[in-house]
Length: 397
Ligand code: HEM
Image 1 (spheres, protein in one colour):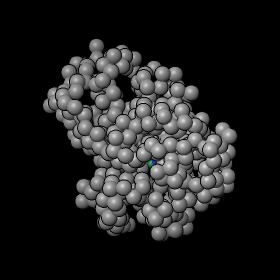
Image 2: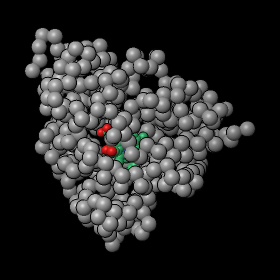
Image 3: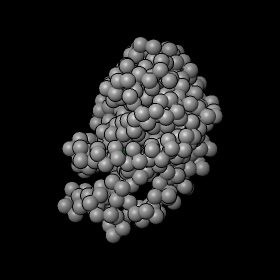
Image 4: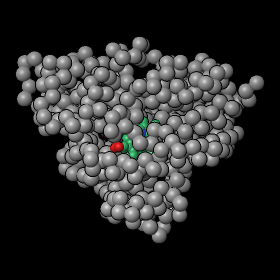
């Protein structure tokens, strides 16, 4: 229930024009209030950094059960997955994933990932012109993660179509979602059956999940859900971080030059990309009781949009938030979430992003747009369909 004092907006956060360029709409929402009722969707939105971060760290009042996406019937299908559970159930699933994604596990992977990044970058750079999305960004995380899972080769072609469709199903029942539901159901079934115990390459993350089931840590039926978590969470997120990075460096040549002369900026530059063009723009939560934010009461059982992309552009938190600044070091952005569901794969995403950028810094003096970038619209993911570039080569002196 809303009152005359409730901040209300008719902004449609899932409309094509808002997905294409959401930042003006986010600014309006941030000015409207700390908690805004979205009348089109009969749900609430948190647009400011402080409240998004606090809500993400408050799973007792902002639950993920049956609520990470907007649409109730689609949330039911995600029931029991790592994203869609609260503690204590969540802790068990998260611990199993963390065995493969923890810093200790990643330390042994770093050199191999760097070598692969160098090979891929050298091959595209040798061509002079290439499409960042199809030739680089979509190739790299897919091959890295598929190998880490131990995924059979024939399963790999469909993973990206599946992940994009699955992310659309976190939105309302708009055209994007309805076109995606069947695709994502069909491909998920195919992929999980292709990744049964006998087909997985030994020693990978997939086998480790079956072993966790053998030890009784998780139930056998939870293996598929965790495989799904790996497949979905690790693809379009990292792909779009890499694509957006190259787009931003093409648009900001001085930032690229600064990185070439001071590699220590690389780590914070990747975080600035994730802050500035957050690959995950929104996920939802559900209030378990009335929650008061800045004098406004959100009722119990309300769907609440966590606007990661808006929080990361909030001027209350970030000076000149709409400026891409590789010296900013925005380590506390919420592009990887926060709290118990904070991205389990953020270490891997950083290793992948840094490996690609590092290999490019070794070889490329400047990145030039060779045509207009094309956006890929997804209900919750911000990214590109195509980014044609030419590169000027030059080794570091
Ligand atoms: C730049 C790349 C990435 C971004 C921006 C990103 C973003 C996010 C965000 C915002 C969440 C929080 C969801 C929530 O609060 O409900 C999340 C969760 C998650 N991410 Fe990532 N992610 C990235 C890469 C990866 C990679 C490479 C993996 C590897 C498998 C991964 C695995 C996961 C998993 C398993 C979760 C669920 C954690 C949980 O519910 O406890 N992510 N990610």
